[in-house]
Structure formats: structure tokens, C-alpha cells
Image (tube, rainbow, N blue to C red; front, side):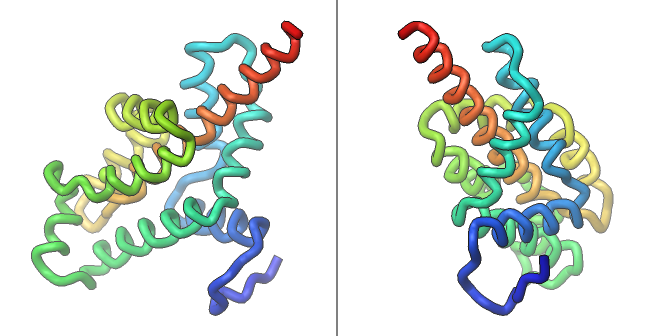
Length: 178
Ligand code: MG
């Protein structure tokens, strides 16, 4: 699919494609996100399939909110890596200052699209850093690398996917009881 990136409005299919492309350029695949969602939900529900996690991750990546946060967050990280920001923000971002918190704000806001549970799931992933999140966190500490926004965005995408999966399985349970 060839997408004209100079326009401002995109279809959901295009937003999914552009998000996948941008995340992959930063070493994150949709499978990485689905794996975190599967591991998180498998703690509460048996038999969560990878396919439903993958489908959920794809759905989340096609939402306008997720599109703008993925695109902007990665853009800021990349500008920081190139040293193109003004001080003190340049150093605050390249040092991933714990007190900064605007990256978590992005993550929390995105996860909030899936309600209180979305936010709680994001908090769990932010603290425990499973899978690709801890890899991103470690790589971000290497000089010349900045993953300040990316780790929170990936955590939030996984939290949204995980919460959506939980909702799907719960509604299936309700239907079976009827
Ligand atoms: Mg961060």
C-alpha cells in the first residue's frame, strides 16, 4: 500500500499501516505487543489465543488517538537522538529523567481509552516491563538512543490490547451463561 504521507486525514487501514511501519523502524513489531497482551491476560483467563491478541493490537493501532501518539512520540524520540531539541528538554529526554513524566502521561491517556482497567493494566506493564518493554528501556540507556516516549507508548498499546481481549473473553462467558 502506498500512502501519501503529506495529507492529514487517513483511513483506519492507513493509520494501522503507518503505525506498523513506524514501530518496526524502531524495532517493535505488532507481535511483540500481542505477546505482552497475551501474557498479561493469561494471568486472569485461561486459553487466551495469540490470534485474538494480535487482532486486538491491530485494532488499537488503527485508532486516531493511537496513530497520533505513536507518530508524535517516536518523532520526539528521534529528534532527541539527533540532538535537534533545545535545552533543557534535549538533555531531559536523552537522560530519560524519571521526574519528567510526560511520556507516562501519553501512555496513561492512551490506555484510558480502555477505561480504568486500561490504565491499571498500563501501570502494571510500566512497573514490571515485560518483553520488548524492558528491551526498549535498556536500549534507551545506550548513548545516542532515546526510547523515552516509545517504551510508554508500547506499554499503553499492549495495555489497550490486553483490556480489549479481556472484554472479548468476558462477553463470551456471559453469552455462554445465557
Ligand atoms: Mg518512558
